[in-house]
Length: 226
Image (tube, rainbow, N blue to C red; front, side, top):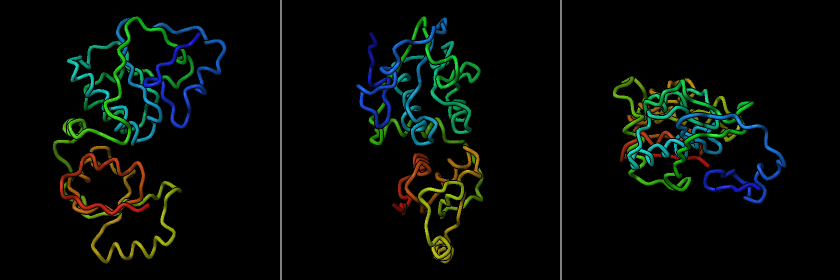
């Protein structure tokens, strides 16, 4: 008999009775993890938005509970290896050599000695100002490239979805108003944060790239295309 804690086992667009675990009549033999394990997994956390604003704020919950984030033997995440994942946990001083990913073969059934599981800090897409401020304080680089543009359009050259049909005409209008075109994938994690911290005007399609507004300041003007 399985018991599912839905807050901890949430799957996007899946109702609890249809959870994947309930389709598995038998679990594989467990892999045992001795010591203290911190569970940081969140569905869709290979996506920049969900990693930054659903998974990482769980660390603020732990901090508020007075838990030392460095005193664990294992850290469980769903997805791992992208620059934003590595760089963000570095800034929280999480020992990267202790990261385990639950989506890799052999990690599907784990038995822990001591498991710490933080709640979600906020409801997804509805975030508390205090949590966002703490995120910016931790993740924002001390300094960066002062030559980055302050008025820019986010060009989704590497993403085929949500693009502009008449982009040539659109870019001509942007150039006329002194708005540069930038490709976020060409920037480091630190420079992306610094770019939005300096921003006076940002134009972009609705999508995960606008998560960077976490680093922007009051008064930044936004034109979001939907």
